[in-house]
Amino acid sequence: MSGAAARPAVSVRSVNCPSCGAATAVRTFGHAVNVVCQSCHSILDAMDPGVTIVQEYTKAIRVEPLIPLGTRGKLRAGEKTIEYEVVGFQVRQIVVDGVTYQWREYLLFNPYREFRYLTEYAGHWNVVSTLDSLPDGGATPDGVGPRWSHGQRFRHFQTADATTVFVLGEFPWQIRAGEQATVVDYVAPPRLLSAEVSAGKEVTWSLGEYVDGRELWSALSLPGRPPSPEGVFADQPSPFAGRTAAMWRSAVWLIALAALLWIAHLVTAREKVAFAQTFTYDPRVAQEAFVTPIFDLDGRPTAVRIETSAPVDNQWIGVRYALVNDGTGDTLDFASEVSEYHGVEDGEAWTERSRRDAVTLPQVPPGRYFLRIEPAGDEGASARYDVRVIRDARTSLWFAVAVAFIVLPPIGATWRAMVFERRRWAESDHAPESD
Image (cartoon, rainbow, N blue to C red; front, side, top):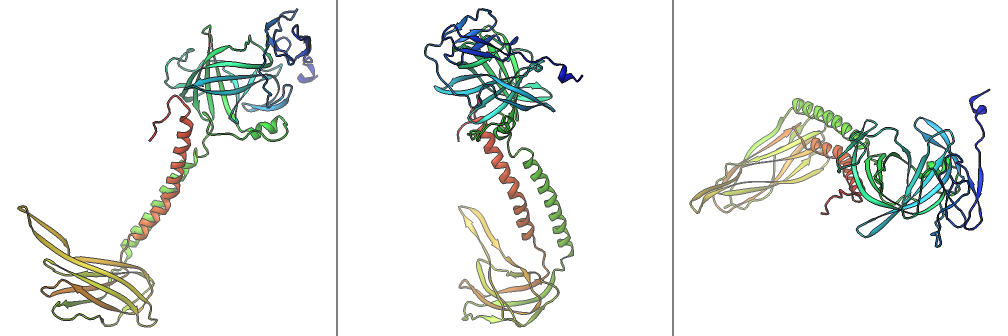
């Protein structure tokens, strides 16, 4: 005979409420300490054969559970999937800075397993179980330092006084409306470590794990859809966890590859002088644009650097260029400027010098070219200036652009992850300061 067939049937009995006479089923017979009448919501003593009233609701606050009592379904419990039944429901609340926050707890029962709980706040769900062993640091949740449990480091999130405001169903402990306990929460997403300290200083530790509402609805075969989650919950796993680090690792490899290509480019670039000539700028003579002799830019399309230099002294020379393909007429316009000024001001000598300027044109096709040159400058002495055209020039602009494109995605992901964590901790006792 199999073990499942040998198990005795779970006994279910009903009790009549002394207050309203309604019959209330007791599903956890042998475990239930309190049962809440589903009709008048009076709390009954299930351990008393006479079923006495522990607390009577004259003005019951009616709250409809999202998950009806008696709902059954299979939930993950570690590596196993276990069937549970919803037998109890309570609403609890805390008040922080004058604002009331309520959450709901569902008691799950399996006659051959320990009780478990489902908690829900603003559409965020946790499957919770009571810890069999204490976390590191002892039983009492003193202070706001981290705690360790199950090999994880949990950060203190919040300490608050919780009040039970509504109960329904049955519970394996004494429960009262208005009952208070101090709740201390620690987080290590997707887990929530909690300690409840009762008025009698009894401490109960539990461990919750975040679960998606859609997964829960499917497991319990509930109709419709679960409520949409609002905000970021204490132990809600970040959608960026792990992904941001992976993106940065990929970025490092891509930057390393780009750096190797850049170094190879610097080493192999020919830096061939395709044209070089010295010209004279004379401000006393009307300066007109002129063209240079034709020169060859051979090989494959590569960067071309045009250098302008002049030994100017307290003057400047500006040159407007046009690199013209003699065969196609394609033109690339650009400009350069060189200058040098010096003097003495308040007894201190100063110098501003930029006697050399260079403009790099990327990916210029091979062909026969000439330069159209139009100089300008200060009125004063004439000055010579040198023009050089370098074929297959070294350039680092593409490497800088590549690095920028590589790091932008992980920077964006890191920023979004920081915003997500900021929203999480905004609801804690350690909320970040506002900017």
